[in-house]
Length: 158
Image: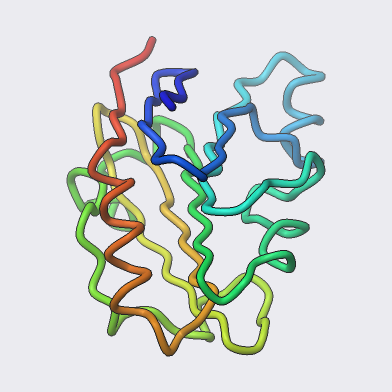
């Protein structure tokens, strides 16, 4: 299934779900009310996504089974592109399973492991946030994530 919106595209394998929406957090809502730019957020998951969930997957990661993975791709302001935090060029497509840790989770859930990576692509700054359902299977689950990340395309937008 191809998922596309806001200059982001991903081809999801069978059994995966995804959504590309605009940031729905309180800060983004306040920004939109005064005419500011609200950035897209992509969620890709190997399990059914609940309608209500936070940008970093709160409300979804609690539903994960050990064999599941969750991916969030969050865009930041263009002024952030190529700053030291976002200096990596291009979305990381091959994730080293040794870099996943329970300490990298936005919300610690026993057995899960996470990873955050910041990068710039197509002049746009992003955070890639990944949660694995079982840190003991990090090698296998990181490979599944890499297969999906290989299909992600980020286009230049105005």
